[in-house]
Structures are given as structure tokens and as C-alpha cells.
Length: 383
Image (cartoon, rainbow, N blue to C red; front, side, top):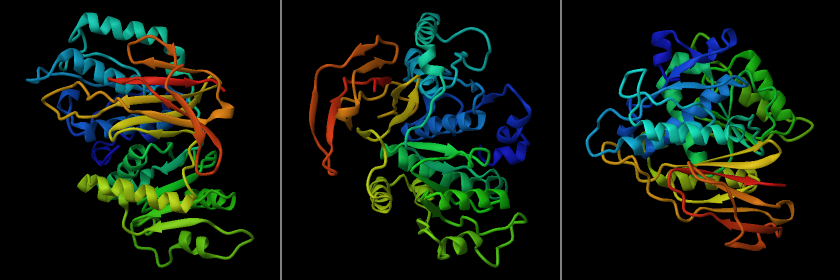
């Protein structure tokens, strides 16, 4: 998805319109999972979620490598970590030893992983429908002309939403028209086509708040600076209803990608919270940094897919630091049974460590403390 797409000519977003099956040889910064730190693992998961947005109703097939005899790392842990990140993101898992297409780094572990996938494949691969997401717009044209400057802003905004455990979804030019989320962020989307801009205006007129960052809309399709910023001009026009938007000239996503400064995480959450009037998510999730959570409706149940990527340094350990303090806050009147499925474990009902109270809006809420999570887990909430 970065500027290698332009150099190679292999744009999977464009190819998807003409192909039923695409296999993505996809990695972030390094080719094996055992070399990645927590930041790169989070980016990898966000990248898979972006590929899922490209693929839509099609399957997302990944070719990737967990382990290449890196010292101080364990091949079994590497396989578990990679498979958890891929499968809980809705993609397939294939265990290739080093760079060969046959064999396995560890056959018993591969059998265990595939047995677990077979047991829970309906939950893992059924369509996932976001509940109340903040959309993040991926702009292929801006990526094509401005490369990694745009990609860093895009990934950075996703990082900030994920680290604050705000529900998010990736929006593309093909899905703009159907978007119905809590807000839409345009992260440094420097070139907007006339069709994209028209759809964005329609969203705004329907009441969807917009957040523009960096140089969004500054350039035309020839990469010339526009004489007039037509999108901002539209947003500032007086109409029958207020057009809610927030403009951040310095893209916080790009700043976070370049510095990894965690104070940006807190500041970003406060800024968009003030703009949107609080947390728009149906479920408020409290956990450590570097724990990925994706909230979706699956088969009539609300599901939270959790991937633990804490404490990964690369070249030293492929086993995340156990997340012991993840808590979910939800509406107590709309919730029935809650089930917990640890990665490679057995599904069980959560019946303990549940407390009730009220949130800042005065609504009755249920707070659920989850069991410790090693690699990942799925929470199913029956409504």
C-alpha cells in the first residue's frame, strides 16, 4: 500500500475491480514476524484491515513468514503470533518455513492452529459489520503522487484511533457512498477526485462530521496547488444545517508515525472527543497500549476481536506481555450473555468480575473485566 505500489505497478486496490482472487505478499518494514517490534506489528494489523477494506466481500489471502531462524526467538511463538494477527483480522493464515512454500516451522503447532480455525471458522470469517465506527479515508490517488508522506499520515491516524480503542473502519472511494459512521477522517488526502469530493459533500449534508488533516484537498489531479480549496469553501458556506468539520493543519497521524510520541495519543483523543461530544463507540474499552481491538457485528452478535501486541521488541521474543487489565464497558440494559474465546483456547461464558454503575451520561453500564490475554481473544456479546 506504500510507494512500492507506484514503482512496481501492482496496485491491489485497482486490481481488485478486475480479479476475484488476490494473494498479498504483505509485510511491514521486515519480511518475518520475529523481527517486528510492537509498533510495526500494530501497523501490520492495520495494513491487514486496510486490505480487508480493499477486498470487500472477497477473501483476503496472505503470504507471509513468521520465522527465519532469528536468534533468541522461538518458532512456535512466532507462528502463534503471526496466525493470531492474521486470523483475528479476518484474513487467512499460511505457515511457510523461511521462504519455502512447503513444509512448516512446526507441524504440531500448525495442526493445532488449523484445528482451532476449523472449529471457529464461522465466527472468524463471517461478514463483519462495524457498529459506530470513525471512518478513515484511504486515498489511492494521493498515495500514487505523494507516496509515503500520505501513507504515514493514513497509518498514523489509524494508530491513534486504535491506541485509544475507538472503533474505526477504513473507507475507500468505492465505499464512500455507503459510509454511515460517527465521523470521517481525511488524513492528508491531498488529491480528491471530483467524484470523491461530491460524495464527501453528500456525507456532510447527511450530518456526518468531517475531520481534515494536513494538506487534504490542496492539489488537483496534475499535482498543482489549487487556487481555491473547494472542500473547505463548501464546509464554510452557510447552509440549511451546520456543516460540522474540524481542520488540523498539522496531521497528528504523520507526527505520530514519525516520532512514536505517546503524548500525541492522549492529545488526539481529547481533541476528537471534544469535537464529537465524547466517545462515539458502543463499547468503551480500557486496556494497555499496543492491544488491538476491532468491534463488529457478526451473525447477530456484537464481537470484539482482540490482538495483544504488547512488549514485542523484535529479534528477542515473539511472546507478547500478557494483558491482564482489559475491561469492557457497555450498556447493561442491552446486554445478555458474554462469551470469551481465547486464541487457541476454549469458549466460555464470563460470569464473574462484572460490576454495574453509571457513565457520565447517567446511563446504566456494565463493566466486564476479562481474563488475562496472551496472544489474543474474541469476546461475543449477545444482545
